[in-house]
Length: 291
Image (cartoon, rainbow, N blue to C red; front, side, top):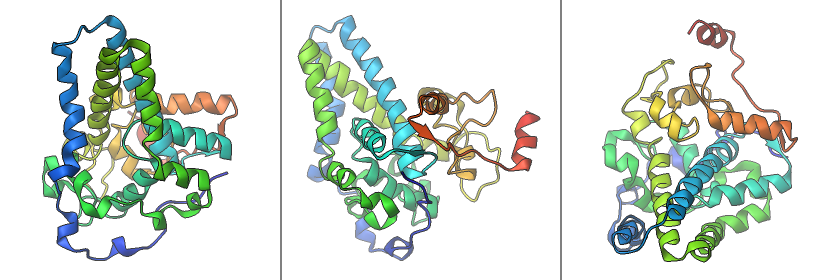
């Protein structure tokens, strides 16, 4: 059972790093990224059915929920506890997003919260919107999973195996869509939904640091973006998150819809997770109750 803070480890990310490691390298590294954006254009030449669009919607919604509730709130922030078996199930489901493994994302997310919006940030908005959105993905500095930031997650060989073989879950999902409805279901249902999912997820690094309202005077530029929260299952309440990074609940008032948190409450009712962390500040309660 997992607990403990992700943001307590020290490592070389606290030091200056060579500039060339922080510059995007496009070349062949960008080919898969470009392909997932171009493949959906094949829909103009393929017969696309209602099934294809239904699969696209369902795969986007379900995988976005898995990313928000599992990859981000659990593996990055340990916002609740669970069993070892369900931990691995969560990791597999989170990996279906195609954004590498939860361990990789948690290891780079550590750096973001340690140095938010500074030159040491993984996706600092100081380097421009497009760098904070997608450019950082192609920086050699973030190629590998930085296991020194993962604490006790390193003790689980099944998670380390999944980190090395992160292509397996999305490949299985892709194969299922191909078998379900052929190439059009694969391209629209899987590839297009993956592309949309990728950009909605990355908006947390870009959009949520250049716009939105600020309830808390944090030492970064994080904002609460309502429309992003709606389509990302609560991830758009980004200013709330930076103030209370270990909270399982990101929408802090009844008007801040957080479907990711409601999903976690359901899992808690089923006994699959427990010890959901919430902000306990009296000042926070007074502030949110008055809104």
